[in-house]
Image 1 (cartoon, one colour):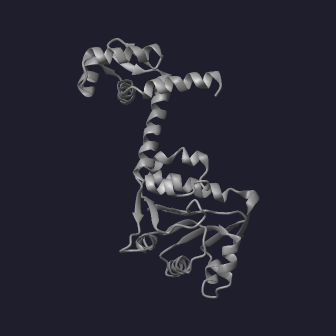
Image 2 (cartoon, one colour):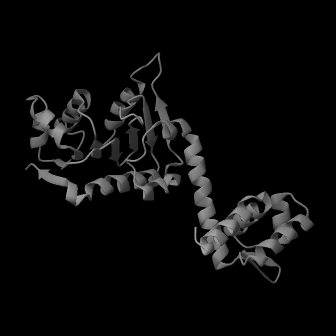
Image 3 (cartoon, rainbow, N blue to C red):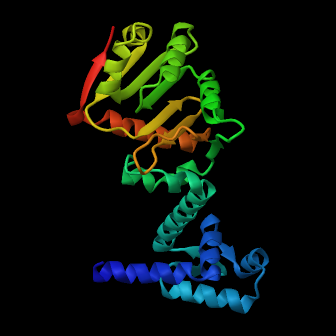
Length: 270
């Protein structure tokens, strides 16, 4: 770290290692408050709260106007990033096993920093009693969808056949598929499946690089399955998010791979 970065790190550490200072910043972030309001909300004596406010004033994070306390511009920026940090931490811990057991190198760092957008996500886990629970759930989700954007890293007869059936029956109106060249070749080798590449409402993008992520984005949900750290695909855990923030995260990841102009060949079959 540079001297300036080290100084800021110490300031952040100073804030986060105090429950009172952290709660004061988050409380005042919501709206400016007077001492009585802070005392009633935080359930702490005036002396404790005033001590914390004084410390924050000295750091130029809080200012007092008349009897009300509010955040300075620096305090506001700190609060925004603190909340993102807390939400990120919550999102990671909520699905700790999913994130911990898989290879995350396929997800760009900018989106790893935005895992707070997946705070409403949840995991479907296959079990010894139901080995196909994650897959069954995924197929059911596809039946809800009209428009799909999928990053497909594996050749799976079950997935290709299901997508083909949904498109042919008019359940899916538009399918945008990103996959590897080898998978396209495998699809073309199967007369039963290659028809999907000739449908007017199917757009296929082939990438000449490894893709270790199975992402599906629709208007109703996003889902995510990943690879183990040893390179094997894991179909036993499915992460699902139905929130607007989750959809934003998923579409950003899809667009990231779609935008790899130097590594792709676009194939749109009319």
